[in-house]
Amino acid sequence: MTRPRIDKVKKRDGRVVDYDEAKLASAIHRAARSAGQDNRHLAEDLAGVVTTYLDRYHQREIPTSDEIQRMVERILFETGHQ
Image 1: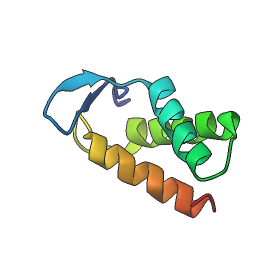
Image 2: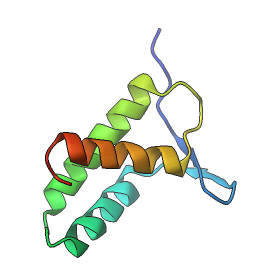
Image 3: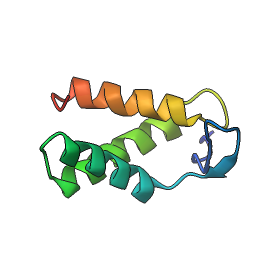
Image 4: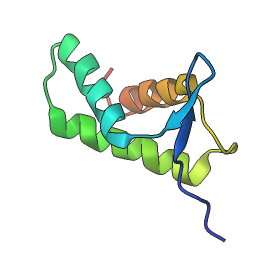
């Protein structure tokens, strides 16, 4: 049985919005730029990793934006991009 793709995210204010991998990649890219690294392709790759992880392993139907942020931080740390 395949799990459904993550298509929604719960924001900090409680709103449920569409999950948008491109928006996540842009946020990662902005954060990387502010840290002195300007690699859009890396941001897109990391956003793809987060999406894959959510699709495969997330236990609840709708992840929160805080959970996604922690995943991004963990992936950045584990790949040496802190």
